Image (cartoon, rainbow, N blue to C red; front, top):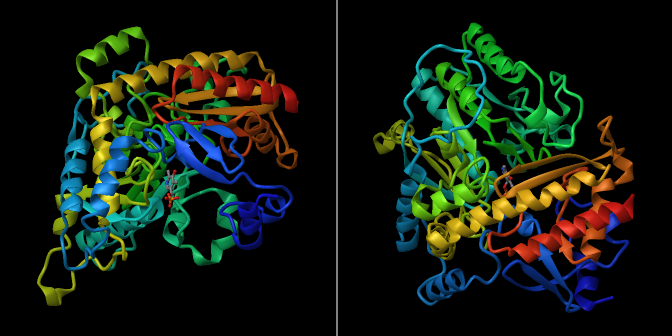
Length: 502
Ligand SMILES: *Cc1c(COP(=O)(O)O)cnc(C)c1O
């Protein structure tokens, strides 16, 4: 066994990993990366088909990000944000606020909309003006959560017990606050005693929706579903019931357009606009977790064809970087992390409104301060990498590449429908989840102990493609620099892996 693999097995404890399984076989030790390719210590090459757990945007060793980090390294790597400002963090905060404002009033035209559950005219969007930096997705959510909680007590009265509503199956990180917001039973059960209580409401999952009366087809379940938008109705009901209790929800937390760790579960077109409108109507703050969906991951528009590509060539600035912008919603809190630095360094941000910011202003001795911060808040290296990444994202070349990649992904994914173990293929922009089932005609799932997703991913690794499943859902989330040939290789590896395993 490789020396580094030995050291790893002797000393390292890996996240979300059954270490007994891990210790059974020699791990892949990554030595280097370039573009969409990872190379291990044995010289084997792999395509990074999940962008190193959803973080990498432009590929590894992008010359512009490398240069930005090395340039910053020669100036200073870190000084504290407690008491001092710094150049890259100031510039990054401005850039993030500008990007978050871009085009938020021009939603996608998104086909069939759900019926209106409330008649009131659409509430005006706030604008995001302030940026609180932290280190990762979990902390970005903790910040939003604490701010929303305290803001509610300050505006509704200190006796208020703010309650939060999030979506079933939600994942918002692994710190105690973030886990409390999440609703994945497996993670929840173990730490139940440490968590505070939040409410959950049904999240759309068209493929396995109890309200969907359609028989399975060889198509994305969102396209052939037959329902009456019961999922939207349940959200409305939940908000109304809580209002009746005299303590309306303080905040509504959601992953926009697609829930990631829940199993790459997309929301049918129209759902997000409708439920955020309901939440606003009931006076709740909106906390958008764009840790996975941010920075172009959800694509250019719902569907990209040659016409879209021609349009985007003419006006690349119209391409939105956040999922919430795609539906014309500005949240009160926008949480970003994973792709912020292009996936190079740990850094996160929580954007919020002036209204929230102002509630924390006061005289020193009033202690209205937001008592929260981390040692590396506003880190210069991270901010320099982020600035470079955002610059690349806004180039015409990157926008066009993303549009093309989205179209190629759609084409390649269609080739998987011939496999009887493929139950649902759900693509949102540059992310796709492929749900494996025993029999597509019945949607019968594989039992957990069959480890279907893991086995398929192991078989893909043997074919030079790395990704990590969520249960029995295979995740494809390539870096934006992935070429058509590389993408074909990813799809071929998945096809062959499924055939080989089953
Ligand atoms: C990954 C993720 C988080 C947590 O981010 P970490 O950086 O792992 O703490 C939170 N929300 C979503 C949607 C995520 O995908």
